[in-house]
Amino acid sequence: MTRPSPAPGAGSPAVDGRVPDHLLRVGDLEPDVLRALLNQAEAMKREPLGWVDSLRGAAVGCVFEKPSTRTRVSLATAAHRLGMAAVVLNRDELQLGHGETVADTARVLSSYLDALTVRTFEHRVVERMAEASAVPVVNALSNSHHPCQSLADLLALQEHFGTLKGLRAAFVGDGGSNTCTSFLSACAATGMHLTIAHPAGYGTDPAALDEARTAMRHSGGSVSVTTEPEDAVRGAHAVYAEVWVPMDRPGEAGERRRDLARYRVDDELLAHAPGDAVVLHCLPAVRGEEITSEVLDGPRCLAWLQAANRLPTAQAVLHTLITAARSRAPLS
Ligand code: CP
Image 1 (cartoon, rainbow, N blue to C red):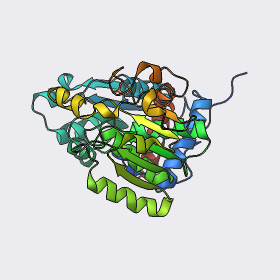
Image 2: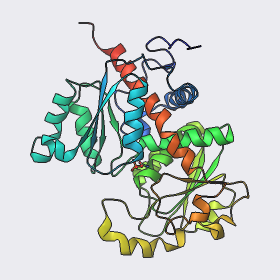
Image 3: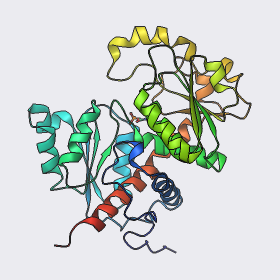
Image 4: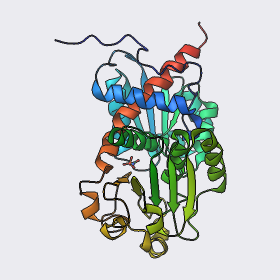
């Protein structure tokens, strides 16, 4: 028997009026909006085609200025599961690569589309897109933030542990990375305790730490910083590893490999963590560098669940932002 699809808009978070216009950073989401998005994603994971009529005829533009496997395919598939078309555009295929401004591009694209997703370099580019766009803009990764990844991370932890509040996580590696910065905000919103272990010169943006500490006064979470990876993983429920050389910094590869060598997530480091601690990785991984194959392919690794969760979380983000934007649009 085919189950009827929910009516348009059904299943949206019960946080009407507080869904942001755009998702550029995890901090754009109030804690209960973030929780509602995770609940929505769980529902969409259980019934992937339950919303297939909800945004029929709509379209999302996916602008990619950097390579992507997970983000690109999960967004396009999420759109398909909402009845939407996905228009995937590389920079060189747009006039953006030939001198047209970001603002002019966003203004025009948003007159055709119902949402825009953007993977770029400087975070200011996604902000400029959002300022000029008439439809929701979703940051599909900038040099500073990776909010879509954090939603999938949280969903994986919630599925594994049944709760997020009170969980202790350790991020081991480049504390200034976009993934770490967004994961910090995610921990802050959900009342998790995060320890970031990084070498000198790889610290998290002080403003991001301050913002997280302010949010944690309400959520009950905490953040601490150390240079010692063994101290960070002691008592952790989850240990997060991330690639050492970002895709736009190949010139720093040698220096980064030298500086981060002590921060590899391997069996030796995990011997300092509880036996039931899980390992997170946003992928892609460089096996043998920031994480060993033994750990990545081992039973305690949630990286594959995180990757799979990019799809239902992308579906929830597109559905929630587009539905909220439509409800705010003036009647013509
Ligand atoms: N984690 C992540 O964003 O993967 P892609 O770069 O493949 O999209």
